[in-house]
Amino acid sequence: MSVHQLIASFFGIGYLGKGSGTIAAVVWTVILFFNASFNQGPLKWSVLSFLLISVVGVFSATKVEALWGKDHQQVVIDEVAGVNLALLFLPPVWYIYLIALILFRYFDIFKPLYIRRLEVFRGGIGTMADDWLAGLYANGVTQILLLFWASF
Image 1 (spheres, rainbow, N blue to C red):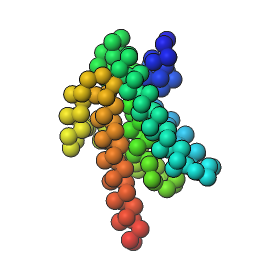
Image 2: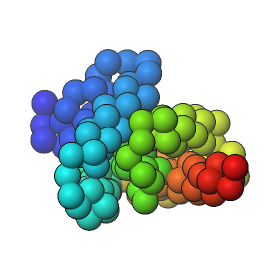
Image 3: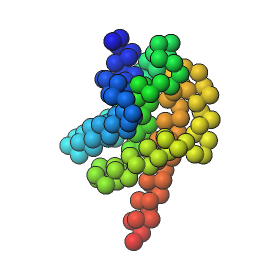
Image 4: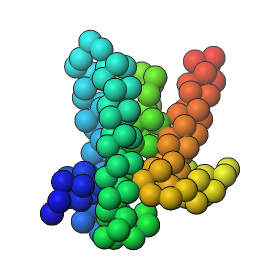
């Protein structure tokens, strides 16, 4: 297994088969939750991790596309980047992270609101872009829910 296969599959999770994208998203959500709960600067770490995962993910997804094909199910680094974006700027409360995770998976799987259109890009950008937008939508909806929640 090459370094790019290892990264694109998020350390082998992509090889688990059906549901591996959800598993990768759950694993990363748990990691971010515990990091945010126990560290003083979780926002900085979350932003930096999103940027690093996105850059490395685009590069690795582009490299493995020649082996596996376009946006192959073994590539789950895009789910990791997307859920990272879905969780940015949210308070580290388990049920808020769970809501954002569920919303992210909904947007990622069903691809409403122009998300599917982003898959037309070539290489790693096409693999990652739809998950970035799904993450943005999930974050936005979660932020709106928190605003309404706080008003009660």
